[in-house]
Length: 336
Ligand code: KG4
Ligand code: ZN
Image (spheres, rainbow, N blue to C red):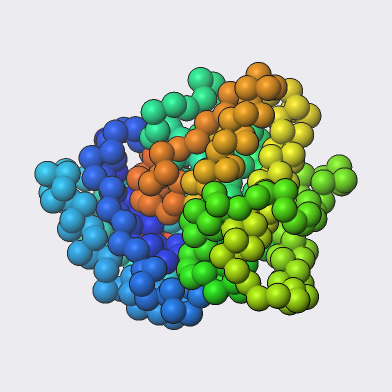
């Protein structure tokens, strides 16, 4: 079955055509970074307007790249939430219209769960279920025990900022640009991760929850109290030390969850899973603890519609169908 998927939860307008939930025929992402970068973050109203302009050309490009027409599409999958309501509604309106006109099944997909599906579109993926999944993106930091393609048990989540949000806010404060994760990743390569001792929040706690706002504030306070100005060398050290604190926290919690659940496989997904230091430290910890660590291809870590098609495929196999009343939700807790 060929599924056309649409993803508009945040600031990427994406469409993909995927066969049988596994073979990507086309995967198109139109980024809005140039629109939001001057504001240092996503401006919801601008994002919605851009989705309206971009969605049809992006779908047309996905169809033409795949060599398919709309009449070869067997079903439509669309991100339903969590995300920005105005952005989600654009994708939902187009998805519902196409499903209605073509008279084919429609399915609503949870954006966070779909990030996990990205691993099954990548060269290496877990052999079986269950496994632990860490979803780390600009909007979310969540640990799951994944029972199968459609069943996730929530183990812990951030109580304040998401990991990617912390990267973006620290980068904005240091005047480095947006989105901050990839910039800090690069600058940190020239810095010393041990130079500054930033806090590793929530590590003492038995819960699997995270908190990054205290770490973000610690970086801001450190910079505000500097006697000398920010030099490139100092920025490198701040970037490396901050990144190390984020990675250590994510790693410690995830490894604790893996051991607590006596599992041998862990999957790390979402935009922050592109981080080079994070990949290095997780792989090293995996080898030391005999745990298989899986990362999607970097382009499938950040928001895309191929992962939505994969997630939608498994929901359709289970018989799930949405009607034209399908509505958006903004937070994970509101998911149906
Ligand atoms: O998954 P994603 O594309 O969108 C959301 O669902 O939020 O993730 C975007 C986030 C941004 O916060 C960005 O700064 C972060 O992923 N990110 C990174 C890296 N590449 C992207 N964070 C750390 N290191 C990176 N290399
Ligand atoms: Zn995302």
